[in-house]
Image (cartoon, rainbow, N blue to C red; front, top):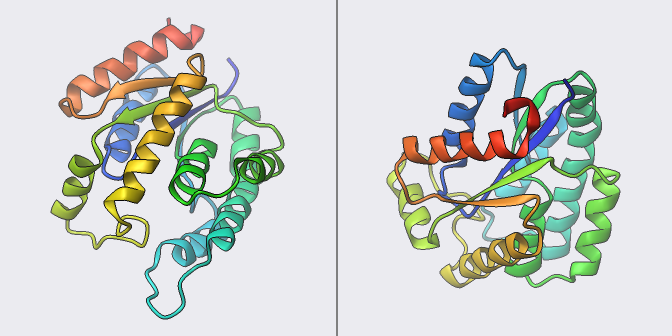
Length: 211
């Protein structure tokens, strides 16, 4: 059985972390070797880049293109150090964010040129695409309310304006419409267990080993 890259995407507070954990437990119950990872921060270098990207700095804000380049650097290291070797070893990788996040956040959210984003995504991934992307669709206000209700402080991206997050939400919707064979929408506002059951069914349909 070959390795698979399954990406979880969505706006802030959409439930990616919880669903990845449930999905990992389910796949392991089927005797499938699973790796959980994330972007940014899936490598030792990535952890340093994650801190630079997500910590809030009032006096020295991160420039938009700098932000894009840092995400690309994190992705390049992640692909070479974690994704490619584990896929070659036949493992299932559940990844919290990948290339679609950059398109949604830096493209739609920041308004940076899509041609530049596409070029950097290709360089960083060497053409490696997800086998399947689960888009957990939840209204941005609901997602941000979940974040505010948690104990963790909001990071730099989570503190962006509601208008910014709406543009990101639109980006995911347009990405899903343009890539129906790769991106599958799941209603993230439903209960955790129902969402998990829906994801199980999606994986069974899209990945023949699980059918």
